[in-house]
Image (cartoon, rainbow, N blue to C red; front, top):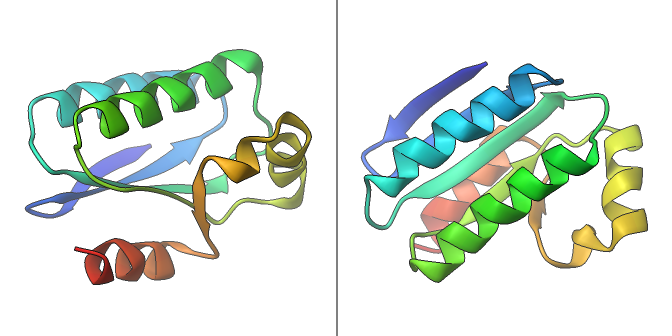
Length: 112
């Protein structure tokens, strides 16, 4: 995966299936802990499934960002199988989604 700085206050993470998914979210968590007011856009285009550990890491990331007033979190390019997991678990109601990374980036920049 590539976790990269899009700008001074936006990080874009291109996620992969496990075991890289967990490693990527751990690296991302470390990056945002050292920043203030940081927005995160996660690209799920290469993620084909989510397990309970993945969901727990996403919830922890969301909690950290909300708790610190850190910024916005956008989940982008969710495929049908993964979207089904978000629907069944009710997580579609607590995360913000965008169709693709470009619209996710625009979303966090417009709300700034």
